[in-house]
Picture (cartoon, rainbow, N blue to C red):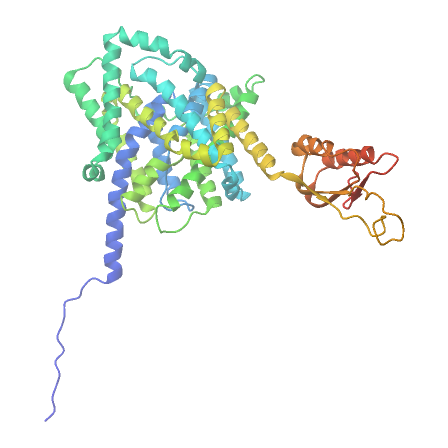
Length: 527
């Protein structure tokens, strides 16, 4: 008898790729909300500290999400206005005016695009880490010095030295003013919350510290009706003003051209270096695709070009928002694009919400951010293990505080190059006594015994002979005994520059004299 097998119909289940896709989308959406909540107070705070309308910080954050976030380069790092450029932007606004800021940012963005097209992104990894750390430390010091005034609802005098010099007067004025003390209490409370909130890890995973600190400070000011300064709101469309011909003409004036070119170069180099160093740090936080540095530089240049066309603040990749993105579980670049969408919705639908935020609370956020830029914990081991690097770091930071960003970084780079040249130009002398030649009058020659002649000295130079080590090298040669024959052997040198070749040739001729008490061995020391 023939049997028939009846197949059972099973309900169709979602395929594994679909489940993975759904989980990835859910993770990206959640991470984008976390980054959005972190970005709002930072975007607004950086803009206010830069002397620009608060909305311009949001515009830069929106461009960083919607445009830079879509472009290839780094998959998980987030771009927007950064505390690292606050000091430079403030100086540019004060010197050239807010209208010319867009022109400066536009030119810096175009320069970044050119550098990316020339594949210069990877070369930023060759910048000394000590210089970058010193740059961030100097920025942190200047940022803190300026925001201490905002903590008390006071106006900062100007640049770094002026701000530091005015601190004693700020303390006296604050102590004698009830309004200033109220604002200081709001700002100090914000800083305390920023320090303590991350210690409660379960709560910090749900709500980021900057949002909680600013929200609680704002609530306290509104409920208690405290007399403190608040953010001025002008509307998103009202602050977007593309640079015009008059702005470019102002930069091209004879007295302003050199300063404008220096500012553009500083914008481009510092934003590029900070972005690419941030990309390297973010790559260490996740197992996804690695950053293409040249493409990331082009993405940053495109973002800054658009920010310049909108008259907004310059952008850079920021490690705080990027780390929050990774730790929140982001899987793809969709998270950083969505964070730009949330910023756009917030800026368009709820601009009045910014008008209740106290400036002292934002100053507290930036003081805390500035403090994190200073490598306090890393200083002691760095000083013990790499003292030269520590000196470069400290000198760069001090130079930025004393002068400005561009000159400070330039000094740091020059010191780093000089330090490397000094360390690689190590040279030393090896002195060996040669045995006397056979037939020099010793026993067995059939002649009466005679005093043995003094053995000649073989002086062998080893290492890299450059002008940096020339004084020490000549001192060692001058200390050789005058009554001994000397053979100078330079074959052990890996490098011999013209200054050393000339000096050693002169020494050999002078030491040789008429009796030829010095000989030289290849390579020739003649210039």
